[in-house]
Length: 290
Image (cartoon, rainbow, N blue to C red):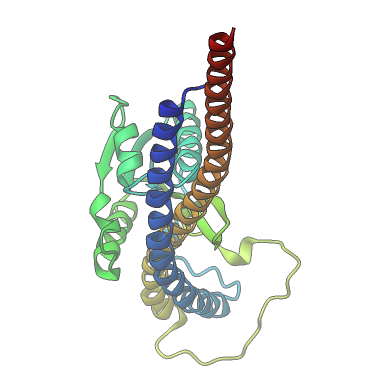
C-alpha cells in the first residue's frame, strides 16, 4: 500500500487537474453558445439561398464556370480543424479523412494542394515534404465573412481559370454538443441539381425573370459558394467547442472518481498506520510488564 505522503501528493495533483478541467469546461460552454448561435443563424440563410437557386435552375441546364466538370489534374483539399487541442477525437478524425483523400488523389495521379484552416492540421500536414500546403490558421481567431469570402473568391478564380479542377471541404459538421458529423463536401465543381434522380418532383414555376435566368444564376452562385464556405467554418467552430466542452466534462468526472478512490486509499493507509502504532505501543507495554 502506498505511503501517506505519496497519496496526499496524488490527491493534490488530481484536485488541481479537476479545477483546471472544470474551468476549461465553463469557458468552452460560453464559447459554444456563441458559436452555436452563429451557425444556427447562418443555416437558414444558406438553405434559403440554395433553395432559390434550385428553384430558378429547374432543369434548363444553365451552366456557369463553376459547373465545369473535367478530368482532375489538380485537386484542392480544404481541411478545417482547430487551433487548440483538448477536444477529444475532433482533430484526429478530420486528419484521418484528409489523409485518405490525399492518398486517393495521389493514386489517381492528380496534383494535390491542401489549404489548412487550424493549427492542428497545419502542424501535421507540414511534415509531408511533398505536399503543397497553404496555412490559413488566422481565419479561426475571429472568423469574419469578408476574410473567408476572400479565400473562397481566390479558389473560385483558380477553378474558373482551370488552374484547379476540384475543391473538397473536409470538416466536422455541428450536430449537437455531444456529436459531430465528419464531412467531405464537394465544393467545386457544383453538382447540377437537375441531374440528380432522387425521386423528388421538380418545380415548374412559371416565373418571368428580369434580368435573364442565366444572369441571375451567375450572380447568385458565387454568393452561394461564399456562404457555404463561411458555413463550413462556423460549423467546425461550433463542433470544436462542443467537443472540447464534452471532453472537459468527461475529464472532470474522471478526476472526481479518481479523487474518491485516492481518498479511500488514503484513509485505509492512515488507518493501517494508526493500527500499527497502537500494536507497537501495546507490544512495548507488555514487554515492560514482563
